[in-house]
Image (cartoon, rainbow, N blue to C red):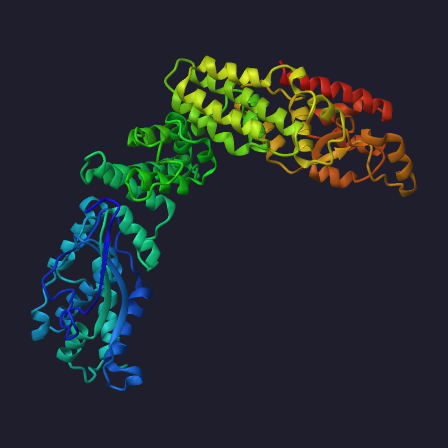
Length: 591
């Protein structure tokens, strides 16, 4: 059969006896069913068991105890051609447990004696789940619900449910014929079985389209399954490959636990991998804009010949996916988390990247580490790289009121430079993009923006005022405590942008005159600085002389220095301060 073709067959089945056309059954031909390695463990809880078992008894007793047996439809199941259970694990497993409990409760039933319990096996959790299943099938059932074995634990609940259905409130047996019940169970419980003759990818697509309950196809699960298929079908790996993939997920969980917080998840790791793959194999840059789930879905579809997506079909012939690459990404992701920043400036650089119009490209940090982690002095190189990258994004976030394609194109080229070039090449690319001040004149002129009204655009205002404040701190310190404190104050605490000369002066009669006299300068960097929100709200629109006492108590150096530098405040002092602030910022950016 061609890899692009598939067949689907559907049939209505009972458990063992079926008088309908085709006489399809689940257990009648002694078929064996396998729960594949990529499924999750058996997990039904007491609530789900109660509904399932109660519905079966209701179909036997009839609605409102009418004693008229009624057929029961318990849903669609999906099997592969190899009798692997794609959808239906929870229901089939629960039926197996149900039969086991019934055998124990009614040991003299002739029909129950004919039912074997060896028709289900599981490959989940590298054989651990099968050990539990074997223990359940061959062992005695417990009398409590404390077992760690999910099959034994649910057997206890099912036993209780059977007692509820077959005994009265005083525990006396009801008029219940076990042979009739088992015959009903084997004859009147209906499934629709959909059997797919296709590769795993197409089988899962069919499953998703049917949209039945069972396997939760979130992005992380889909990657695990399809990476397994890729390694099995394209690389000739055996089932141990699935355990290797699962180990990646376990590594992330363990590292999150050891770190004390959820640093990332598999999607975060795959987002970094997406960038690396695009650059490494020169895939179309439009793929940087794809969501990570969509990117890998289309990549696997194309690679496994399920569907040929236009941005992949001519570009994946040489593409190699690697568990080792993903391990490396996980390693550098947590290395960054645990090593921290060398200086306060480095910590601020990362925050300025996040604060910029290009915040999503912060993951270039990990692309860089992926490539250069084994180079001498790697950490110092990373910090230098981050500082220069932040300057690029600061410049272009200030110059323009939106993200622009020129910077996106530059970023895509930079990623390719990181993956394929040297550290020196990367830094040359960054330094060239920063350039000199004259490179940033004309449309979106940087110096004009810094000198103008910066209040009208929140992004510009927040970047400029925070950068101005950082440059008044001991931002080159390597003291971890200072780094944490300064970084927290600048980027995590609640701050406002303070008008030194209040825009809405407390004296309402003076406002028009102030606006006409100060003009644009009232909203310039000369008249603005960051301030703790609590202090800003407390001083409100008071005159400058009344604000000074609160300025002196600020945790920000730039605010504490203000009263000494400017005991009084007017337009000329604002213009003087603006000139110094602009010069300070430009000197830092183009240093």
